[in-house]
Amino acid sequence: LGRGLLAGVLTAALALLFSVVAGQARWVSDSGNLGDYIVQSVKTLGVLAPAALAEEVLFRGVPLVILAGTFGRGSAIVATSVMFALVHVSNPNATPLGLGNIAMAGIFLGLVFYAPGGIWAAFGAHLGWNALLACLDTPVSGVPFKIPMLDYYAGSPAWLTGGSFGPEG
Image 1: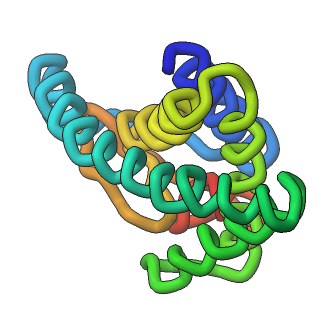
Image 2: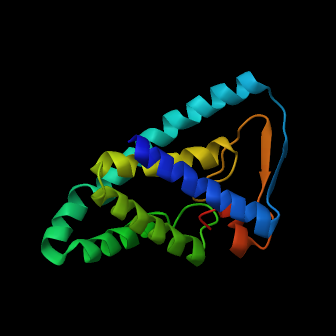
């Protein structure tokens, strides 16, 4: 779980760094104080953790193992990653590029699943990605989060920074 969390946080940090450097994404001060930030971040984690675990069980749990037994790991990872992306098609501000990036994230999570740590490492990576983005006030797969003290501006162009869909976009 810990290695997965680290992988997810570092991957999200890299995506945000790219958005800042290449697309002039930035944060500005917002209302609230550190106590408000911590309380809202903990509440946000309380929402994100069960969702990430449910998605990992649904896509990298039994279905991935069954498909891998029939078609091989590579094909199973690709198939479950496409399904993972399609589940996000109705998210706010979804774009074809964003869905393609979510499919690639599914491949990443599938590879993490088969690395030491299994489902817990994949859950950690998923949660690490979502948690860092949300706690820095960026949208996660198009879903906005209101975090005190910070307002995130994606910069432009949207195809490079993800725009209102978030870094996955």
